[in-house]
Image (tube, rainbow, N blue to C red):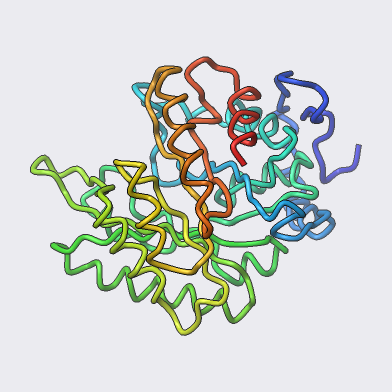
Amino acid sequence: MRAGRVTGTHTEGGDAGRQPRVDVAELVRIRTHHPEAITEAATRRARRPLLNESGKLMIVAADHPARGALGVGDRKLAMANRADLLERLCLALSRPGVDGVLATADILDDLLLLGALDHKVVMGSMNRGGLQGASFELDDRFTGHRPEDIERLGFDAGKLLLRIDYDDPGSLTTLESTARAIDAMAARRLPVFVEPFISRRTPEGKVRNDLSAEAVTRSIAIASGLGGSSAYTWLKVPVTDDPDDMAQVMETSTLPAVLLGGDIGDSPEDQVAAYEKWRGALQLPTVRGLVVGRSLLYPADGDVAAAVDTAVGLL
């Protein structure tokens, strides 16, 4: 076995539903003795265009842990077991129609060593400083991938979270740092996916995103105008509380967009309802795909392959 790669750990697309196994000891051995193997794996990774012939994107998201957001439904630490998360990711990435993954450096480094990123779209998560539940949650600093990291590693795009609270003066700093990140990505001709929300704190101090049609419309308008160029900007948007509002909401911008999944609940019925919300919005002219994480990696019935295949079928 090559010193810089863990082999035999993930299934191919034909092994329907078979759970891959991750050798944690071997990952740790390589990280300990050959840390340069991560850069070497990135250098030899077989790349592909951002969009294939279908013009649609199906991306699996796994950047939640770096923000301390480990819960899925009522399971507060569902994403805390890294080997289990990697196995779920490898299975999802092996399914036909899955284009790639969005994650932070630690997870992408593991996936590089596992050989799971060849011919996949790789998106680096850029700002994870707004830790879930923290007093500074809305001060979402850029603590993840920098534009120069994404370029150096040969990754395909970046993603950033933009939450704006009209009652928090610190949101101005967030807007400015987001604009400069968009500028830096555009200078490198790298796509950046901006995930905007109008947010506010509840009386108990928890951050809540407003998914009303008006709020999502405003967030799209604000995000679309950031930076000196929008040429490489994509939007990553939620489906509104009333899915019927999405047609009008998405008229706010001509930027290409993908839908985000979010935490959709604990029951199979919740999963089916989410699929139906996505199905309608995916027909809109600016919507180019899905970026979904927890609801596919940790479905209510436990069947990752079936959840992923159903989502792919919506495209």
